[in-house]
Image (cartoon, rainbow, N blue to C red; front, side, top):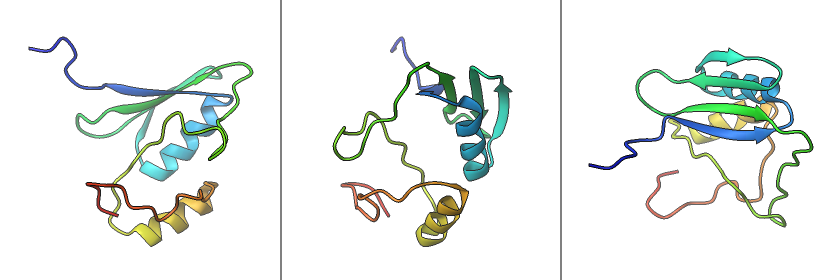
Length: 107
């Protein structure tokens, strides 16, 4: 038996945990389980990993594609064009990889 069973939370460094949590809460509908100026977390229904956001002073988001991605999150959606439009309306930014197809993944 493995010591580590499954991921419980994916934690992202950021400048503004509340703003990032608010974006993902609107995008996913997940429950905001904790929030203060230094940390915020969201939990989905069921046993899937949650998301947490921690303030890191001086944090700079990586540039893409120049700086390379440190992490990206893949979410399954039923209506890709509709999801793109909704996320853009929430403040997301279209990447140059938009529309890419990853091996073994459905669009």
